[in-house]
Image (cartoon, rainbow, N blue to C red):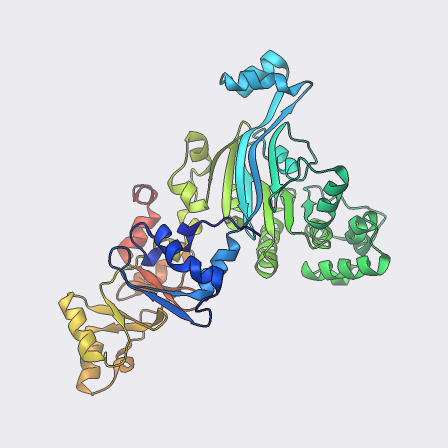
Length: 467
């Protein structure tokens, strides 16, 4: 299958300078496509025009290659409600507003010229105020509502053009939907509610029971299989609704304000549950919400809608830093920066103070490097960019005096922090550290450092927005 690749996202940004995307494409694509050197764990690239010093693992690049596939795409999509909707297009072309078109024609513009590309395995949140078109949009994605114009492509196939029989097959195997209002049958057990969609699809009793039980296990309700909806809490009933969608093992999960009716605490628990499920199964999830905190908590990317139009798409921090207009800006007003950004977002990788552990490079060499750079502390990394620890001028002198190796010069503080750590959890750690705090990813690879000044500037909204 042809995959849409965004090469700029191969670049591990803390390590790259310059226009790296095209260069990476030319260097790595032959290996990705042919499998050349696939048994080689590392590829080292040193090119001063573009890189400071970079080591890429083939495994990371291949994972990026596969996750960049576009699963769901809409192109120039319109939905106009009312009789003879084509009448509206001449007014749209004239630049009339949604309200003006309604006044002239009696037609309501639900979605206007929307285009989105949703990547396989991401949680994509669509949000906006009431009447923005977000709920209409999600119903266009599985043709619960027929589009007036445009394309809806799933795995490259335009479902706006397929037959009813083909559409039923897509809904049965590829797409499931979770609504805000649970939609459980009160006279059916939890197990039967979970299996209901499969029953309508004609799946035999044994198979649907097995799949329903597995789905209930995923949401932690296997012990309630024989209970009835009125015996469950609101959060548990929504879990049943989610299990019913998961039972068909869909590629794409559409969730229309699925947690909005829940109490705040239960809503947060369900958001966490969804993120955990996503970590295990990596489905493509389109989540409709009007709650900014929810979007920030679960979304890999967010699309903001206004009057039927998509006005901005980006990661939470991209939109926060560069809102497209005042409408978007109002959504993010008062956002707690410390909860939105994590260590990886502000960590800076600099070659200064970076000590590469190689055979023959001991305390004497490290000491000279730090003295030449007029630095009190340094950060040791070894082959594969793996973080080893921090050293100081004093610890290196002690190791040198005692004729010990570089490992003996490692100091207890500062301890490295995980790249995903929210800024709110860094305050104490960074504040008490004797120097800038190193940041590592889940594989203990060095990402960069965070100093006290960097953290304070990041927590200052004006400082973030102005770079």
